[in-house]
Length: 306
Image (cartoon, rainbow, N blue to C red; front, side, top):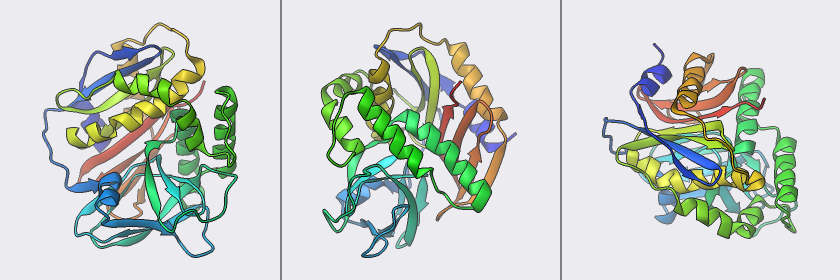
């Protein structure tokens, strides 16, 4: 039995909370665990971490991350960093050890700017929308298999942002993903207010327009609670694009999705810093898992487009 299967089988799947065309099925765990790391937002707020361009001239697919603290810092796939020469999102989840300096793989989400606004990046408090994260996830796996690098298809990321901007009738002078979120804030806030973390909830399965589309799982209910708002925003950004009522998936539909994750072929790679990166894809699901010290720190999975 793989670690992914063992982890998923230990969870309790609960009935969904539904707001309009977004359904969220909680995943709960009886194993109470206190996080042994700071999140990226916490570390930046405490000023014990710094994210900068890798040099004065910069490089689109990489940033420099410095952890000044003795604590580990958890960076989650899809989180947006704003400032410096252009806004970026994290390509993968990373656990950075205490007092470590590492290069982190990123993608640009602001194609119309290449000039400094600040010397360091700040957290935007949001994630790349789920549909684009799914495509990026598959591209990261393909890049790892082909070259050992965690590179996205940057052109596709930009195309996904342009398509979202067009679909939601948004404008941005620098083609920034963040401007879409700001211009549709009131609608996204309505989704965010509809969902709250439940007791012992460590993850969730998300469904948009009646179709199971993704899963997010963390090693602690405390961590999940910190990320729920970003996750809802990521899926809600796709939900407001269609905004149509649909029959909601059943618990059996969700269990079938979890089963596809358990049977997916897995490839293992050394992590950017602590732990290992597990990648799966090529079938009906795609995703990645950050594993450290024999536990799943973060698992993200997406249904592939039909």
